[in-house]
Length: 390
Ligand SMILES: [Zn+2]
Image (cartoon, rainbow, N blue to C red; front, side, top):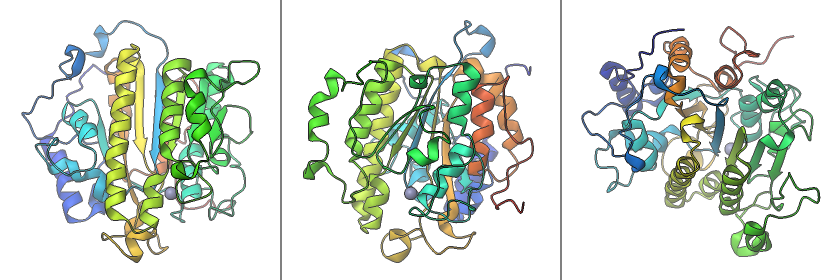
């Protein structure tokens, strides 16, 4: 194991990220997991943490790490990285002020990334994210996808750790998410679309008391996104929060959707406002994890399924851009927080991704190596975003 050297702030690389984003987002995509540096601006953490990483060797032995994996639909790097250049996050109109405060405190790292399929559509995107493979052969568009034909990393983690189905869960606004998160329905716990959140541990799968009232509002017009195949993210947020704090699962994947809907309506300011809301959701989850003592044992990963075209309104922004690979909409991003006690493992993983283009197909090996180091199924070589010729 490598020595616990975890200074992660080479100014040079962070500047390259900044330049990359400013000049053209493809530049950012080739720089993997570089923290944004704008020292010195220490960010005070609640509960007296300095935000500095402790040497991994000092951490007490704990359980296998947990994972909170969050996807925000169709959020392009233009808005994701817009806080990277702002010093006074609280006052600026940037999109993820709280998340980037964590980046400055070195608790999160961010990276540019490209999609893992040639389609730049949501379902192909989620299938590449959860299976670690380009699924173009059986998933070309949202209405044209089979159940993902590869065992997903959610299923794999459940088996490799010998977990109950309720200990690995996917909670998402979109009713199509179930065919991206598991190859065999029922292996993990899935809740998606306009469906009540049940307690998967109870024999009658009852609606948890705390969620009964909200559950009744589901499907009411004022809470529906404008799209019939989804529920409003507010429900997904609350259901996932209940799951995180009550069930305390090993893995929780949360899928939000309103951002893409608002963009499809060509509502840039609504989309931006939604991103601020997501930033608040993430902050709340982090606080919940701190309150329940799980924060220092939880990996948090935030990413998106596809980018968008360029500009602030009209065809490109509203849609996903034209369908050729190097389009603006093929560029995405990732943010990851790895607990300090896994610092050495993380340092050795991230080293492998430092000098090349990061793609959605890298998510699986990264997650599995952190979550099930003795049972990794990752390709040792970088995954290809192009469909296999076999
Ligand atoms: Zn999408």
